[in-house]
Amino acid sequence: MTNEIGRVLTAMVTPFNDDGVDEEALGRLARALLASGSDGLVITGTTGEAPSLSMEEQVAVWRAVRAAVGPDAGLVAGASTNSTGESLELVTQGADAGMDALMLTVPYYNKPPQEGLVRHFTTLAEATPLPCILYNVPSRTSLNMAAETTLRLAESPNIVGVKEASGDFAQIAAILEGAPEGFRMWSGNDGDTAQLVAMGGYGVISVASHLIGDQIHQMVAAAADGRQDDAQALHERLLPLMDILFIESNPIPVKFALNEVGVTAGEPRLPLLPPSEASQAAIRAELAKHRIDVTAAV
Image (cartoon, rainbow, N blue to C red; front, side, top):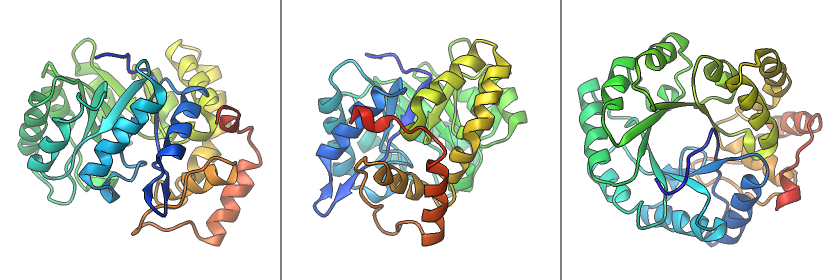
């Protein structure tokens, strides 16, 4: 791994304009996030609208972000689909595009058995020199990767961690207790972060850090240092904003919120749409309660 993959990673949106990916806005946002609390970035993931990007666009985003932030920033590329063959085409391009690690999502829609997950992820990890982070998000994939499966995969030398978005703390505890030394867990849900890190997790791959990155960083640091009262106080203060960013499907709300505070994010691509008027009003009301500092770095 060229660069350290830190505790607070922003699952970055992909700005669009009428011509496609807005690479100028993409680069500005990447630099702003790294200057306002993010240790690194996860690009072309769920929040980056990977399902709406062609393979060529995804790789172009990787290259554009690396060019924008320079050689020293930690970059993780979402690089998988529900097809092992197509995913192989992506993962084999990650190193050449300057990525430090890859994030591999549980295949969606086709609902493979747990043994299929083991073979899928092992095949991908063996095809790249880059370290791989698994991503378990059953609310989107309709399939949960069991703790036993994650622990089997954790024995693979090239699989270094997991983004856990199951919300199942019994499962989270089982993984944390059984994982080999050095295997890291990032929370995939902002609202679970303080508890997950207090249990021994490493950090968070965050949506809310687009807007409150420094405060997310403070919360994670407090939880990791054992200052649970401080972490809980930050969690309670930030939770309403974390929640409002999921009032509709991610990344619809966070793109709207970024545009509202002066950061060019564009609109989501079809089949996603801008938020409803009611959601817009709710997002604006919550934004007004917080000090949003990302614009200072844009």
